[in-house]
Amino acid sequence: MTTTVVLGTVRWSDRPWWRAGAVGGAVWLASRVFVTSIAMIALWIETDSAFGAASPAMLLHRWDSGWFRTIAERGYAADGAIESYAFFPGYPLAAGAVAWVLGPFSANPVPWAMALVAAVGGLIACILLWRLSSRLGGTSRTATAAVVLFAFGPYALFLHASYSESLFLAAALAAWYAGSTERWWWAGAFAACAGFTRANGLFLVAALLVMFVVQARRTGRKVLRHDLGGVALGAAGVAAYLAWLWLQTGHIDAWWRAQRAGWDRATLFPWDSLSATVRAMLAPSGTQAQPQFLMDIVFGVLILIFAAWLAWRRDWAQFAFVGLTAASLMTSNSWLSLARNSTTLFPIPLVVGRGADRRGWRFWVFIAVLGASTALLWFNTFQFALGRWAD
Image 1 (cartoon, rainbow, N blue to C red):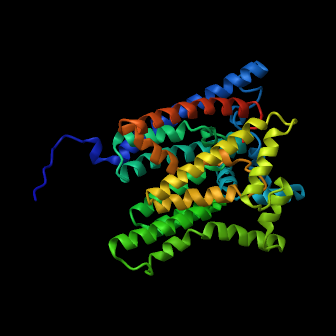
Image 2 (tube, rainbow, N blue to C red; image 1 turned 120 degrees about the horizontal axis):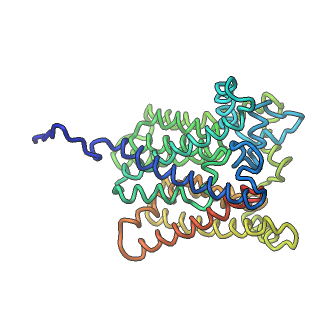
């Protein structure tokens, strides 16, 4: 076999990470401009000020952002608020570290640090998603389509808001990419970072374990080998936080206690959870939240259909991640925030994006999903910027 070297010519295909950075970064920037513009327009209409008479860092600083800010500034259980234990420490710790660097240059560094960490996390996630799509056999077109669906998803504003989703996704996608290339210790390390950021990092670890077993069977290798420890390492992030809470509070179930105290979270049968969601949607009061409860139900059905599609395709690793996430959300006291959590389900844009390279119904599914996603992104960003419930 001979190898031809073309001097003086560098092709995109020779440097896939460069292309991932260029395309992923461009799509992320376009999404950022879109979300920021909608938020500024919403505030201008409401307050006659593009930033609502506040710092630009506060433009997408709402709801849970306040909890993260309190943790970053004063630690957990400030003023006895045990509800703060419900939030995993990865994002506020990262924001606190960046705030320490920004301290000499800003009188109020934490909001800026939170916005910066979220922005960098979203950018890295877009780059990794493009590279992962191409690594899994996608073309340049389908990889770009996957990132567009991801960055303009119906709740993609949370890739830019001062929330933990973008940091979680950056770590989760890094873990998934490392697993797809069989670098299992790296996969476990990144999964541990994801689990230190959000509780659903445990579902990521379970999915990586499925990926590990499937790869082993496909290649005829043993499942019980040394790099299985890399997968197990992924659980360290969640375990470390829960162990710290146990030491702090004396309660092994401190995280679940915080969930109940702050949001009345409890585990129910799925039909009871759905019934509670329907009642909340139909309640005569609280009209602001009613559209989001409807979205939770719609997205729940769509996620179940998608999970069934993954099972039919025997894509067991992605099925495990999507299915476990959906099962957790659908057995809570309601389906609250289920729709928002679709942003963390990166297999959805990976699979749907493949339709951009085909003709027939799959292409039109891609077009329909992109159109509906962008419209919902506009609506949710408008709501969120005005402090109205956006799931």
